[in-house]
Amino acid sequence: MALTDGKTELAQQDQDELVYEHAAVSPSETHLEPAYSTERPSELEVVSKEMSDGLPRSADSGLAPPEDSPKTNGETQSSEDCMGAKSETAIVNGDGAGSASIDSIMSGTTDSEMGGLSPEDFSTDPMLASAIASTLHPQPNLDALFSSTTPARSRAPSILKSAQTVSDDWELYKRAGPRYPASIDRLIMKYHQKHSDSWQLAHDLGAGSGVYAPTLAKFFRHVHVSDPATSGLNASRQLLSAWSAENDKKRGRFTFSHTKPEEAAECVADKTVDLATLTECAHFTNPDAMVRSVAASLAPNGTLAMVTHRPIANVVGNQQVREAVARLYEAWGRKPWDVACGTDAKSRQQFGLGLDYVPLPEDLFKREETRRITINAGRKDHALFRAPFDASEDEEDLKMSADEMMDLPTSRVDAKEKRVEYSDDGEVGKGWRHEVGWESFRTRIAMFDSFETVQRLEPYLTDIQECIMKTSPNGVKVVIEWAVVVFLATKKEQQ
Image (cartoon, rainbow, N blue to C red; front, top):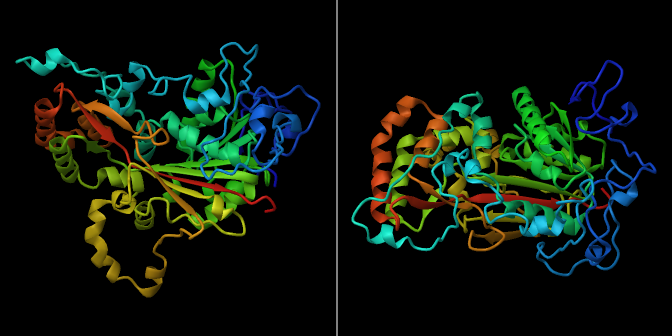
């Protein structure tokens, strides 16, 4: 299927020539149809022959010569664990200087444990606004532990000024954090590498401001960004333009379309997308229509990946602070959940199911290869993702008609699909736990609510501050963790 006229927005160089942003593409290629040629290999060389051994053969998507995505030989990897794939071939950036291999990106050896972020980066994340950029378990500060005086504390740089430039609450929510750790990228990309290993085209659906697109661009030759909101698409253009300006040796190129996730197949050619992602937005969709449309766009063995996190974090390792924070969020009320889930009843109900409401048609996907993953949620993912105040609305459900009851979202998990649980204690779930100061809770509220609300909640914030000062080893920091659900599925080869 060709690109739908009027839906894809391309940068126009002049009246007669359309070019993709950051890519020289002729007008005849603007439909993302297969365009094989004798040009030199892609700037993205994904895997070596040695790495390919033991992985299934994949079908190339239609943006590059066949040599850009190496085919594989041999038997399928026997391990059930999708984390076993390795790669040793470098990603080629110009002359190759300073480039990293896919394996090094996936293993995190090119970045610090915090994803290569500087303290300045942390100061722009509301829940990390007061964090000290250190490991979670630093050497004890004996002077602070045994001193009779209160340790000196400094206030992190404010992010409220920049936050006020974003008018849409949900867009602000998606941009505000938590920042996706390197472990989630490795989880998704290693799963994709095992089942497809084609790295031509990724589609970021419901992208909002495009915060995940730069990550996709590290792995894929081309990234298509779509969002149903014009404001989100404009924000993604600005963010990705800035990202491209700071990354001269670009690994990915971007195109854009004003499209709903349920219309994914209308903005790309059929069977060309290698990886389709929905981050923090799947619950806003009609899941049946969305899954079938995405499936039509996916190449054989292509990957569908979804990620959703809980809108508020839990405190771990300090029961007194945990209870104080729980009182704060109870007093705050519906706001964080309204921003994350929307006020529409069906969106909230779907969000409360984690990602279990997403169906997986057996005629389109390999159910036995599906992974439904929870991180830091244990077996309480439904309880964690359901808004607390929704529990009091069960009586309203009893007043529904039979048709309304039938329309309620329910779990669509099939017995053939595999559930996996991880925590921050392991490598796969690492990175969703952070150390923050008490001020970060104030910043989080101020990001999404009024000054009057912050004033109203001041006694609860003061209580948290005092609890941290009394119970934290250094009187400054406390550990929080986010609950996350991940959905990974592989399209059948012949569909």
